[in-house]
Length: 104
Image (cartoon, rainbow, N blue to C red):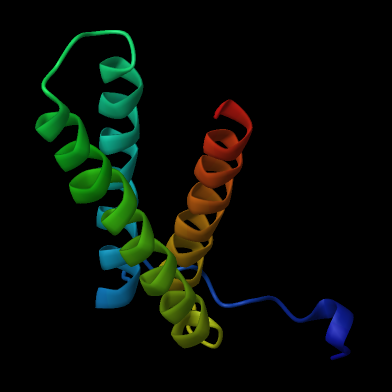
């Protein structure tokens, strides 16, 4: 059988902890980004706005980026969701930072 006829192993439903950490941090950072955008149009105390920016958006974005790189690195040879969740986290951080840079 030639290489063209070989099929890939089916994708499993599992992922490593790094993949789930990357996804969780991505979701929290996206929530923080949405709140930050909302707070641009609503009057809130400065401390609350800073807490949302640094607490939810920025630090979770950094965690998503780092966990995403680790998930991609560890998920290269695995046939599960680890690699894909890492790519999702890295893509989100790149998109959010690009949008934030162009917006300001």
